Image 1 (cartoon, rainbow, N blue to C red):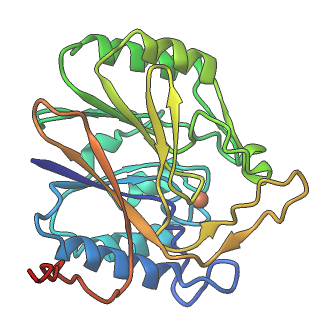
Image 2: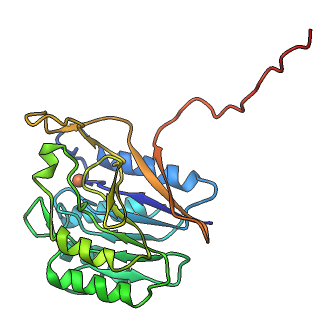
Amino acid sequence: MFVIAQISDTHIKPEGRLAYDRVDTAAALATCVAAINRLDPKPDLVLATGDLVDAGRRDEYDRLRSLLAPLDMPVYLIPGNHDDRDAMRAVFPDHRYLGSEGFIQYAVENLPIRLLALDTLIPGKGGGELCDERLAWLDRTLSAAPERPTIVFLHHPPFRSHIPGMDQFGLAGTVGLNAVIRRHAQVERLLCGHLHRPIEVRFAGTIASTCPSPAHQINLDLRPEGLFGYILEPPGFQLHVHVEGHPLVTHTVPIGDWPGPYPFSFKRPQAS
Ligand SMILES: [Fe+2]
């Protein structure tokens, strides 16, 4: 069994600051990290799918780094629309896979399931993009290992959520992404963030999904003039479980203290 924990949209602020003056995103991430470390079996690695910090600032990445440090397993980072590539690289120089310039796209090899990171960032914009250069890298990299089950992870999901406030910050290049993914049947999943909710959609013959945030969730309001905002519903993360010969299984895990677990107990009917 190979277990991947996905965390997303941690939106870390500088010391002493709350997101939207209300959400303590650092405390939320600390609780999430502790919850992941307590799992048995322990995840083999963590994917952090963007919006790692709130404003792409170095002091935010410094704080993120210390919040992630207690994790007992490696963590792989990709940028979201709130991130800054240069500041990420400056604060995580030991994360060599981030590279030194250009897009942050990489493959993680030598695992039971192959991981391919995509960079959808357009600096200064809320929406994302997969341009021809980024898609060509994906096509080339998938072509190199057609037999290996593969997870592609990216911040912006390649689908509409029908939450109008979020769909205005969508992903450009989804037609091209669809065409690339359709050529490579080994793609088990496209794991995304951005929507701060667990959502699944059929995409290009595979499944595209998004992950809840360990902090605030996006308000679920499907009305055209619905309230576009955040809500403090139970925070969460996801576990993606790979077992050789089986399809990838995704569990969404709420973060918190809950009564239980209790064993099922059944009273056998008495013979009369
Ligand atoms: Fe976000």
